[in-house]
Length: 374
Image (cartoon, rainbow, N blue to C red; front, side, top):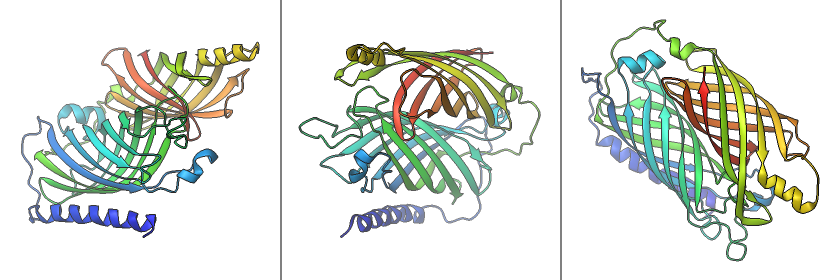
């Protein structure tokens, strides 16, 4: 049987399990809601994934003819109180999930075990059918990493601990007060953020099918849009410092510091969206050591201008930016790059976050950052 047939069989099996769960749900078409909206709803979820690996580099193209599958369990809080409505004019979920992914190539790629924290805003959560958009990040344990002699073909990841990022778009159909059927698509990226080479990173979109059970059902009071959303609608200026450790290519166990500073402006254009623009300056000391070893007298620093978009989801912000180098004596992999960030903003000025820089589908580094908003 072909791998594609195995893929269809796995997804059919997942669908059958979900169907059995659906049949055990109450059959009443009416949905009654708990009148108390002050407490967050509590949900348990079980989700199946099946997809494919994107062959984003010539070096890993021969290994990309695999069809990963996974199973995911999650616990979430669904907020429906006045505070959630004030921030979003909607009802977001915050949750955590654990998942197992089989990459369909045990000899080279092995498996991944992930722990993810996520935020998931809903559109029309009070209706029987709703849409949701999930953004998450966390930690992954990879059980068959690169080794120069034992596993030289695995150029996707070289550290047992890596960092997954996930974006999902889901349709949700409420079967009853407690049961929700979910289906959609998910895009996942796992890499070590440049801590060690090789680090091509693994990118795999997947079809997603799941079921949720409410331990404490949600309540969705009748509310109307108001103008009391000043916090969410403010233009912000932001300054942040960031840093990480980066691998030396000639000595994979030795990491040197990478530090930088970024300045951005964020202009809201809707309930959840804002346009961003700014600049950043990066000093990569691993690059400096490489230049010293080659005897090259070039500046190891780089500067860039950036523009993009961000989702403002309460105190969380998920950003996507495109950067163009304006100062780079040592040319980068590409003249243009992407940044993907997740930040938590306090009620005052400070904020904290994680940010991934990538050239196309290849991760450059993952940094941690702290800054102020004014």
